[in-house]
Amino acid sequence: MSVALSTDELLATLKKLSADHGLTGRDGANHGLAGEAEKIGAKWWFGGRKVTYRMSCRLSAPDRTVHFRDVVAERSWGIPPPTLTVETTTTSGWKRSGTRKDVSLGGQGGTLDYASFRDAVEKAVSAAGWTFHLEGGRMP
Image 1 (tube, rainbow, N blue to C red):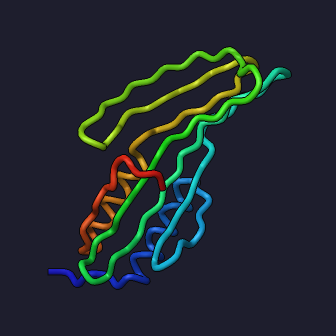
Image 2 (cartoon, one colour):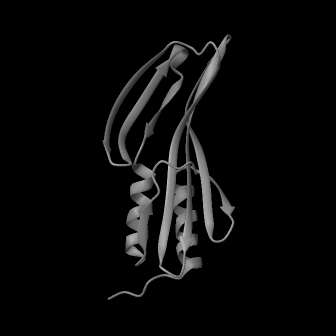
Image 3 (cartoon, rainbow, N blue to C red):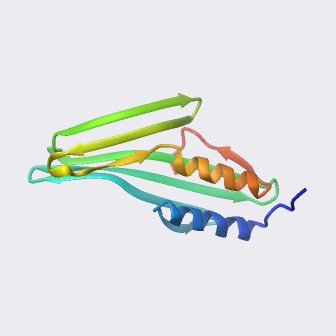
């Protein structure tokens, strides 16, 4: 049986994982990590739209649990450009998975995988000998 990673080792692993997934991270208080990535963006003369993935996790050493939160937030200003959106989602409890692809005028847009980073964190946490706990319904 493998030995569980320490809090600092797991935090370093999660920081590297967030950088690999393109999230700009920042250290939170008390062994925490937060990050975000703008996955979809479209602008034109009259306004624009951005879709951002945000996450945070807090490591609890006494019970070796990682408390994870994530959200996809869409923000628009003015009159957003006309956009074609193709989205497939599956929701089970608080877990949402699937993809979203937006294409707007001039080829702007992007792709977002709702569960890619969360699944990678869950796998890394389990491999480290810790417990993954998704805190659904709460903002990061």
